[in-house]
Amino acid sequence: MPQHSIPTRRCISQTLLAALSLSALTACGFKLRGSQSYAFSSIAITPHPGGAIAKDLRRALGGAVQVVPPDAPLAQAQVVLNVAQEQRDKVVVGTNASGQVREFQLRLSVQFGLTTPAGKELLPSDRLALQRDFSYNESYALAKETEEALLYRDMQTDIVQQILRRLATVRLNP
Image 1: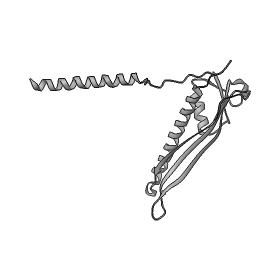
Image 2: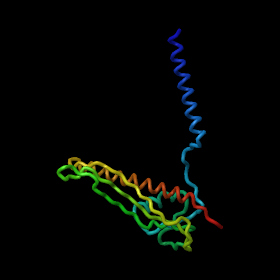
Image 3: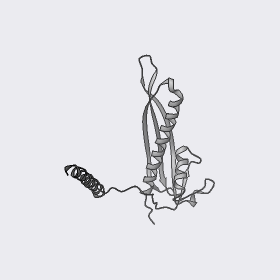
Image 4: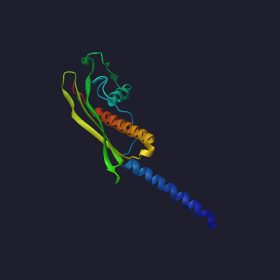
């Protein structure tokens, strides 16, 4: 008889713990991030073609708002996103005793601002910067090159998501 009560108590305590955890998450205001909604229906992204971040922004915004084609006048867009500067850096941060590189730091930064076609500032010019450290071994040069590309891609995706969240905060005044 005692053997049957132990699994039952364990099952009840696990269920109770799961219910408490779930209620704690909902009580703190946690909710899954949904799709963004924007106060504008069309956007122009300059310069064209721009760097990889500008291209990713065009792709990410394409389903939510109309992205004005590059050959169309800026006046056709409600807002203009200027991705002014996109910079990638790779810096040595660690070497061994014989001077061989053992660690790199990858940096990705972008400067952007949002205006109306007439030039009224909606989001002031801002700079986002990310960095990632990764170890290096010349014996695995090809694998490390692939890792570097993946880290840059991850940082690029993160910056695009941050810009999209900032664009969602913009409110247009009539």
